Length: 235
Image (cartoon, rainbow, N blue to C red):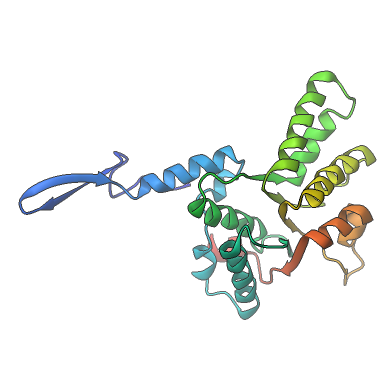
């Protein structure tokens, strides 16, 4: 979240002087505030509201991360004329969530009214579990959320596979992904799981099930984000 603006001191206006006369113009922070308000409505985590790709470029990325950034920039520049979304794979703390939210920031700067939505796997699973007994109130809420996720022009799906789910929850997640696939809607995901496990751990397919992984394979291009914990590098 942005700190108090030093230019306008939160008034929204900056005073300039020209030819002995003072005049006011809107402060540049207002555009950022509008962007953050939109991102809040679209469920972007508060920590990453206002994020764009400049933070990655400023971190002096290695060659592998530079390639990821180039691919993400191409996605943003070409949107919506792109065939596939992106699937970010990497260990904990390498910047997958930050990358997803940077996509949101970049696109919303260019298309303030676009329909995108961010959801975290754990939050989605928690909501679905609350309605697994099909109580009318909770089930109605879940139905609304499922439709929101299925219909967004761009879905940012974070922490995919982070927790185990029941067959009922898995079926609902597949429904969302499959609806998006059939409608040709773009999805960008992030996960800690890989398609091959070097240490004997679960693969992404084992974690999600064949149906969901197969759909994501057709819908996204996999990009591995390398590096150490960015939270230690960048704060």
